[in-house]
Length: 86
Image (cartoon, rainbow, N blue to C red; front, top):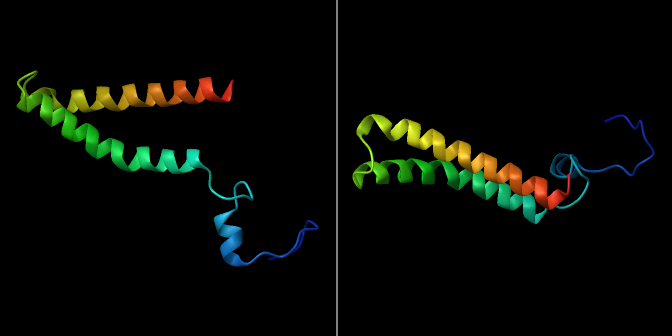
């Protein structure tokens, strides 16, 4: 890798691991990944649970999932907006 800037040479692993912010991963990044991994299966289960509980018909499972996904994104972005003060 060419040295365009005066920085100490890093190993390939360090360049890949810390490429975006040059620091260790934060708690927020771990929580974001956990949300990404668990939210979709959880929302699918919740949408089917609503159908099994008799709240709506079979044809409403996909719109219920979409509503849960969109609502969670709104909450997540709202929370980030409030916490970062932007």
